[in-house]
Length: 139
Image 1 (cartoon, rainbow, N blue to C red):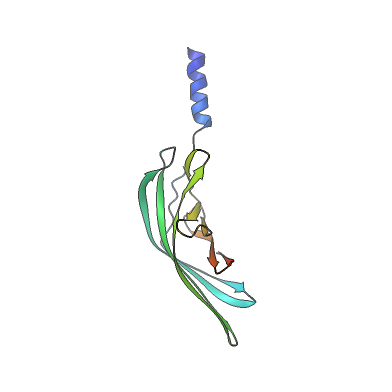
Image 2 (image 1 turned 120 degrees about the vertical axis):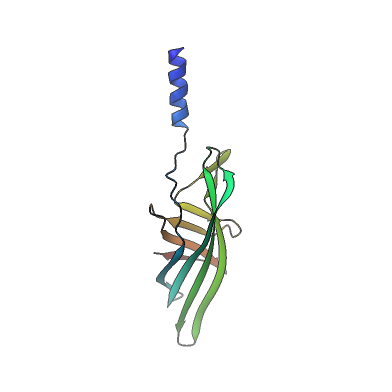
């Protein structure tokens, strides 16, 4: 009986999915990138962070993040301007279930969008589509 109980406990620990509970911080991240050879400002503003009231397969809460992304740059007559409202979530499909990630968010509507945060909740990078291109801003 002891052996069975120990085996069960070890199996439970091996399948556990542990998160730290790092929440993304509200605010604005800014950087400069090069798009089509033009120096461009990339601004990302985290507007709202809400619990989705759903949990992953391990009981961890999922969050939804609303962001505003803006690109602006100019070189001579050529302008780059793009504004988008993007919504992200940190719950991902995992095998037959789901798993919440502390540091990785995916686009809810625009599936080609993704965002990474650091262990303190600051945006580390964001990838989003502009037309057929994927733009990456690293902060």
